[in-house]
Image (cartoon, rainbow, N blue to C red; front, side, top):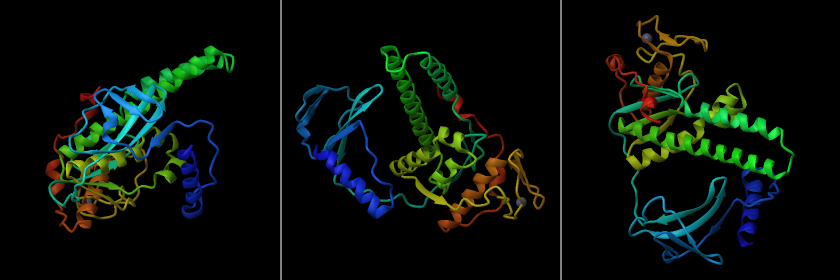
Length: 310
Ligand SMILES: [Zn+2]
């Protein structure tokens, strides 16, 4: 009950101070927090939830040594109940310094993303499969009487597939973020307002790809991996030649190749954009942009990273 009041308070404060909307009524609570807990509540395979009691728990990993348990959040999802344990350790983690190989990343609709080293990452295929399943279940739902047991069972199946899509995407994004960190000391991305983007032309595709979430994950993984992460200005990335910096004019969406009439530099359109982003990043951190550096890198390094993952 305390938690609910605290959330309501936060919702009102957000409205007054941060311009959020009027708090909306929520029928169901999907999670709650134990804000101050002791280490002793968690033992191997068990969690002792105050007022609820000892509950069996499958641990996703071992509890790190020397950390203090700060809070437990219990959540209900379509595929079960989860306990999120938040641990704290009193250390200062320095920000990653500017160092190492710079990598620019351009996200797109044709490919999931392109790197300035010429790698093109395809959109994952497993979504299509799951989306097909989802569609068929949604069709079946229509033939069922609303509120009936069969209708509810079908609804549960749909919810589980949504959860599966969400979890699979997140897992894939983590792996991709680590894959990018494997090859770079600095990563530069476009500074995109995803909310505005999702409303416009790219609405369906963008939401499906979850770029906003991916950038959040990438920033987090970079921090953990000691890779410098920076967002740079996104404007006109597709209209500038990464090799000689001349404006090449607008490309139509169907034009997949960058060709510079000034210096003759030719490459994939998304790779060119990511190289512009890398150059901007290098300028932002005060490194010189070597004009001909990108040419040699491009030979034959275009790979389908995704095919190595399920
Ligand atoms: Zn050029």
